[in-house]
Length: 153
Image: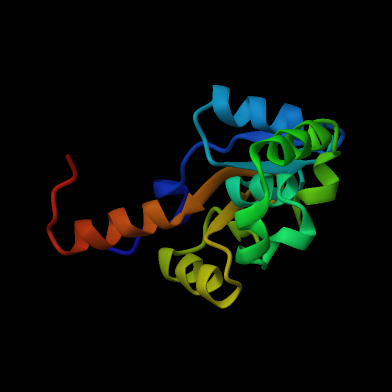
């Protein structure tokens, strides 16, 4: 029962590279998604944003790997950093040139690509390289469950 990517991919939510942190966050909240595929004017994939990139953008670099210093950071610092990030261009914090998968590829190919590249979200592209879907670990998990006869509720 090998499935093609186009049979299990989810709808892709896109944003263009000329947008800002605010635009990306607003779209993610309104569209109830944790990731956006960044596309150019021809719908070709140029980047990927997930919630992790948004959080990294609002946490100062000097605090990212310092749990002790973070303990002393207060809410005012967090608020200021969120406000500072508001106008940051998407290109500043997106994952640039993410690994993509073709919509005719197999689930095994997507699992191997995701693992080997440590990228758990794979933009799906058509033959022209345009974003047409998204594969996440959720889709892979659902197919594994289906193979083992686990009913989704």
